[in-house]
Structure formats: C-alpha cells, structure tokens
Amino acid sequence: MVNEEKVYLMTQAALDETARCRKEIQRGHYYKPDYIRSHVLEVVGSITVSYLFVLVLIALYYADYIFLNIVSLDYARYGLVILGIYIAILTMAVFFSYFHYEKKYSKVKIKISNYNEDLKKLEEFYLKSREEAEDDAITGV
Image (cartoon, rainbow, N blue to C red; front, side, top):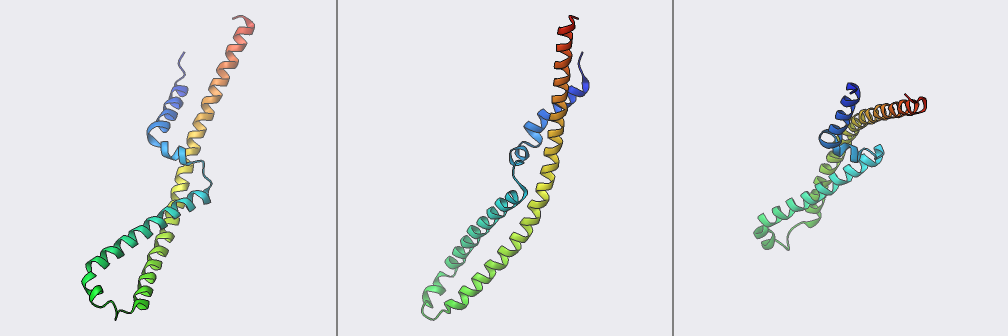
C-alpha cells in the first residue's frame, strides 16, 4: 500500500534537491561568519575592480586636459579625493552587504533545516518499513 505522507516527503525532498534550493543546499554547509566573510570579500573585490574601471574611463575622458596640465596638477589632492571616495563607497558597500548576507544566511538555514527534517522523516519511514519486513520474515507471515 502506498503511504501518502511518504510520497509527499519524497516529492518535497526531490523538489528541494533539484529546483527550489539546490544552491542553498550546496552552500548551506558553511558557518555563518565564513559565509558572510566570503560574500563580503566578493563585494570588496567587485567594488575595487569597478572603481578602477570607472577611474580609467574618467582619465580617458579627460586625457587631453591631463596631458596638457601634467606638470601643474596637484596629484596629492586628487589622490586624496579619489581615495576618500573609494573608502566611502567601500564602507557603505561592506556595511550593506554584511547585513544582506546575514539575512540571506538565516533564510538559507531555515530552508536547509526544513529539508533535513524531511530527510529524517523519510529515514524513519524506511527504518520502520525495514523493521516490519524483518518482523514479517521472522514470524513467517
């Protein structure tokens, strides 16, 4: 006889493994600080590359001005302004990404705990059915 609860749990587990939270299951084995730190470092790298790219584009846009005034430019002041803007952007990005990934980690952990509960229930069904089969084999029924 087909146990409907068992079929439901098997379907939920299969959906979780394939469509709904495959990435979460793969990433769910991180500790919280490691998960947050790795994603924040990705944000820092992305911000740094993007900022350097924008600086190169701005320098190319003003290349004629830079080449004409290369001797008279105040490099210390421009450097401090560029560094200040970079630090401000990076601080905001790290701040927001930290809280974003902390919240995301909590949601992932809830999905993974639900998935693990379904797997434990399935295991209990299989153990129960195996014990019943062994009891039937022993009693000869």
